Image (cartoon, rainbow, N blue to C red; front, side):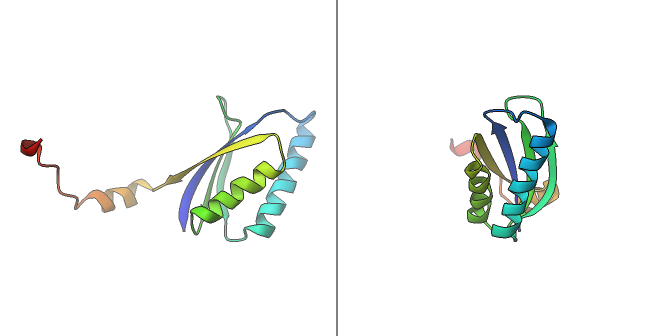
Length: 105
């Protein structure tokens, strides 16, 4: 499973905290129904240009795109998805990469 980081920004705020909770429940119910292979790892409300940061795993980019699209179908939101690699996995991957030959450039 690949790991994805998704940033979501709402274009309007719901009228009450309860409405946000209900919207979140409806969105997650739909994602669980249509993308059962996507597994949530963490969700955060953040300060800055986006409202939410979610971390989830999915089998491939197409499944991650489907998750983002489902969120957008509820309207008034934009999403941005980044593929992510855990640090230990990254180090193992690059450990055997040969350095660039600085004398040839």
